[in-house]
Length: 83
Image 1 (spheres, rainbow, N blue to C red):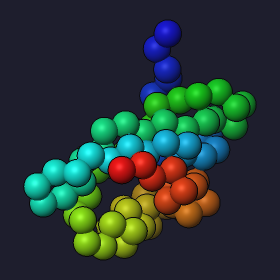
Image 2 (image 1 turned 90 degrees about the vertical axis):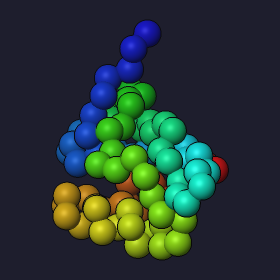
Image 3 (image 1 turned 120 degrees about the horizontal axis):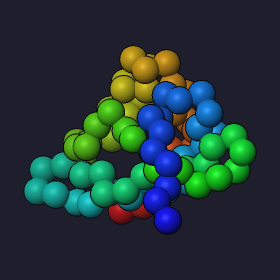
């Protein structure tokens, strides 16, 4: 079964449930991101970044969110972080 793919700025995205990061030499790499739509169905989430610096992780994500008009904390992205 293939999950539908939605961008993180899609208004139908209710929340992010898993944001899996893999430690790289100088940054974290996004390995997997999933969430739920407003109907409660599981979806894959397409993020606008694949690399995140180790320092300032939250600030980096919030800066992308502001540009896209996304409320990162409201989506639960920080609670969904897995390293």
